[in-house]
Image 1 (cartoon, helix red, strand yellow):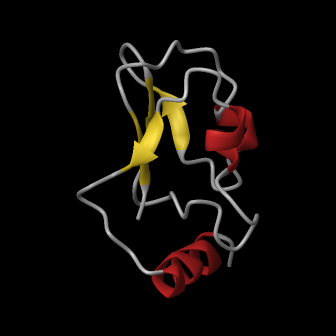
Image 2 (cartoon, helix red, strand yellow):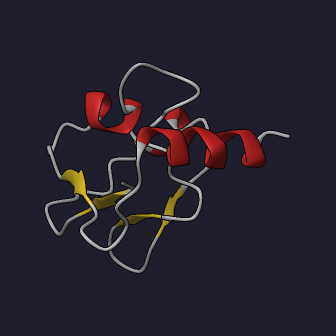
Amino acid sequence: MALMINDGCTACDACKPVCPNEAISVGDLIYVIDPARCTECVGAEDEPQCKLVCPADCIEQHPDFVETPEELQAKYESLHA
């Protein structure tokens, strides 16, 4: 599953620099995660780094993008080929 940032985002910029896939960017009001680039850090880390550093605890599962760990690994490998 890709992750998403909810309206609790304070735009603190803690998440963007830790994303190994450059999936996080500045949106209109809050930061956004590109589901095509988000692998929940599968392939790079043991757990999503953005969730670890988010002081607002506003990063959650994206209900529209359900993926298996194998699919996330394949996505990571295609992004870093």
